[in-house]
Image 1 (tube, rainbow, N blue to C red):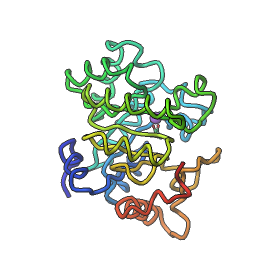
Image 2: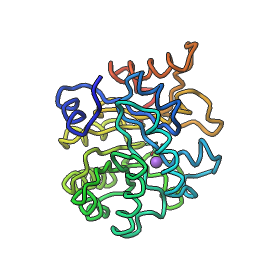
Image 3: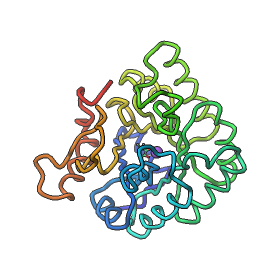
Length: 263
Ligand code: KIV
Ligand code: NA
């Protein structure tokens, strides 16, 4: 098995091979996911909810993400390590750069940032300085109070057009991946067809270049409310290895997400 890189992810998209991504927060799970063939390990700011028990991602700091990133890096071999910029860490492009530098010193190989076309200038600033960026659009949980809850995005014609404009602007600014959260499956396909970089979906339909889930949802251990796009892969399995393996296989063969996981 070879190390996963931005060019290898692009080649996977070109070859029609689906990309499997999971959130990961520690070294033991990093080793397990890596040997199960997960291509990208995301140190999501969801760690604030699933590890720390906050009721949103807003309290998470750069130091929190850096600590978990360093832990994941020590456990993984080949998977690409993607870390989230948490709330309040990218108010200006200079602050974004400093936050990214902290996460990259901890071992992150790519940084994910929540926001649309308004972020394009920041993305370009980061990419020009050697920071690979994954743009996160659609339902962006750091905007929960503005959005009025964790709701499907891009349902209206206007919303769908905005999402497409955001995706295009972020790709043009140099984003290497565009992540789509909680948008109608048809729109997930449209955005994917429109872009040349890989898309990763969570509640964005089966036609994205890859899929991501929060590991606690995959294992059925998160006690909070379950989103429609969540599937417990422990059902019918007798080990965590088997559950993660089943997830990877289902992403690869296109059987996850099924219609019941889509909007
Ligand atoms: O923080 C996270 O886990 C995420 C994924 C849900 C995409 O951003
Ligand atoms: Na996140």
